[in-house]
Image 1: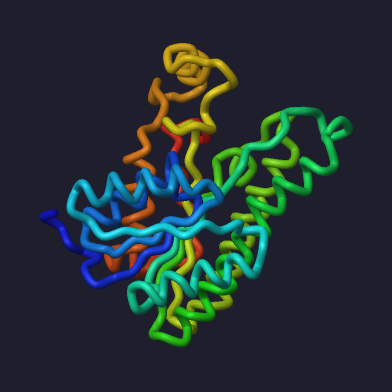
Image 2: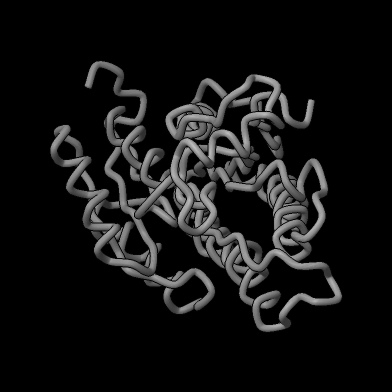
Length: 254
């Protein structure tokens, strides 16, 4: 660990058991942070903690459902109790949902996608900001998406609505709370090398051949590339970035 930009900082990552969340948790830990990963699947969270500890980092996990406010309050309280504070949060938990025309969307699925992708981030920010503003400020980075926030695709009504709403909520929270010393920003990844990029039963080669033609850079993004953007937005180097939505999609929405 040569770069310790986050030494002494406590970072909370939701959806930290796989994909972007795991990569971001590892990236923060490599730079000296104590990291708490949260999510619904304890086994995957434990694997993230194991990977961080193998590299000499500090991490622990808490099982929580971001759609349940009591869980969210406990999640934030656990991070504070274990490591003495909360300085940075990466609100990353999300789902893709059903692919169908709007008229054929299952209503329960619509509600689930909005609950996790939008309301879950609202609840997380609500409790994170309450702690941060009472203890000198902090930084929050939300995971949005190039789909919805920056481009609309057919058959993805619930996901598109949730991510468009999330980007708007990010800007609203940024304006509401910069006076409290809390910087709020977002990243909007395109296709990246996480579980959500695969169709059921699809191999990596099949996934790449399906997605790469729509990406001007010609490849799917690496998880570390998204994680690096999250870490930068949370760092002092991005101290003048407020309410920004950083698109990382290999030029797909350029």
